[in-house]
Image (tube, rainbow, N blue to C red; front, side, top):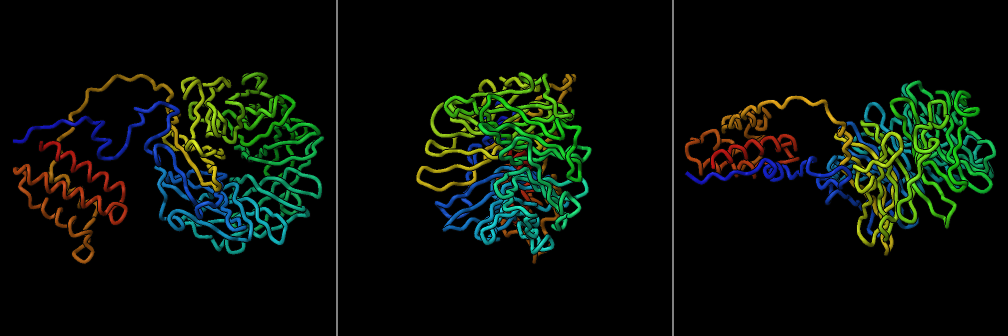
Length: 536
């Protein structure tokens, strides 16, 4: 009998799955099970081209969709990339996970959303004959343009009497109608602007003025919408910035579901917030479960062009929430300059903000800050509530979006720019710990011994997947032979059993993501490995 070698459960987990358990990483750490040590960089077009990522969203199946633009040879094309939950490219989407669409000489996707049927909406701007329009396109789940939407996949462009329209945010209303929002140019004026489309890409002329709503904020020289949020009652909150003579302020406007100003919000539907009398830009908003509104962005201090992370929280009527920070406002200085671009609210009501800073010197880095519900930095996250991550000493990282996966992990996204030119999509995953609400203590149960599996169990599992569908459709010569040998095996011969089981594992690996799914391969391999362990 051979010497029995005991392997720890942690070692076996890493050996079989290549996974470092979440419990062994601290909240705020890069997740080593994502991409390369927690980071993913994607060259969407050609080497040296400019690939800029502006938004990401996570599908219900956990896959990550990113949108942006690709610039090369004086052409700017809309780009989409889809990743598997672990950061690898999803080769079922487009070409090796990438879709580049050349609607015109200049198209850029700045935002995306999903429809209930899983189709992907992407919005931004498109230039045609020198005029800039809202761009709204729809893709099927495999990355192909949905030709049933609008005009062969692209909603018909319109100007609504404007001299330019740029979109930065998308939202899908409960009735399936699509809101697209950003900035509308009316000669020298720059206004809050929203348009609405029916679910099939037709402009909804019942919304505002023939489909378009514009709002000129009081005393404003210029304004734009950066983000949208839909309340459960259907009201629309648009957030962005308002330019005054010498500074910018946070600005929020609330509309009813048909685009009319909601006079129960702020003053005549409008709320503005100033921090230090300098340049304050909202980049993102999110709604808490209690209806409060959290906004984040970049706040100027008025000192040597320095900027900091800025947050403001509002009650549902637009008034400042004085239980948050100081008079409803929080600022966090990180390095010599920093600015926030997106936020998420975790299940434990903590607020995570993503942005960029030159924390600890050097080039710009992805920077996360986590706050308790009262606006104080959460010192259980990273170092004193802050996490800064670079992508290499010669890369400048620019932040765009932040999402939370179903397991609580955080996906931060943007792009990296190289010293010698060019830029690429960039993502990083951090241990989120959103499930770290202390559970109600329960008595520790007495462990039930796990029965040692047998080769018969492995054969039953293999057959349950219906992997072999006759000689003509057999999976693989080695795998078929392994299954047959296991069936005929007398398990009393340990060494022969181990050799055949190892052959079986190799054959399963050879068919992973081909005729055997990832999940099936993992289950078969771990069961085979347990049998091998029991034979030592």
